[in-house]
Length: 100
Image (cartoon, rainbow, N blue to C red; front, side, top):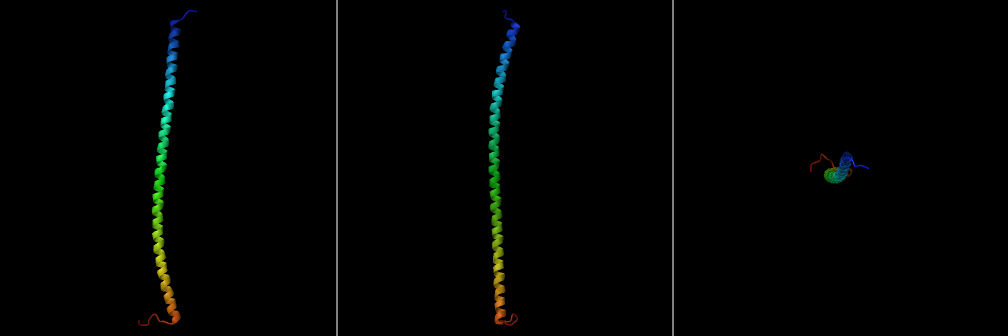
């Protein structure tokens, strides 16, 4: 069997090409792994930030509602006390227009 130079050249080129393709595929897999890790980290940071913002907004809203409820309760307490006093005065017979 006679060795043809052209066949040897084709064989050498195909082996070089296969090695380059194998290295390229390996490098592509590494880059894909790094990209996935980076995307996961960014998603984690986004979730953390969103959770913190949600907590802050919830805490702020809760404080506002608390203060409004406290103010409303105080106002209702005073109105109830005043109404009870007026009712007691009517029962006893005190006149609202009488000089004090």
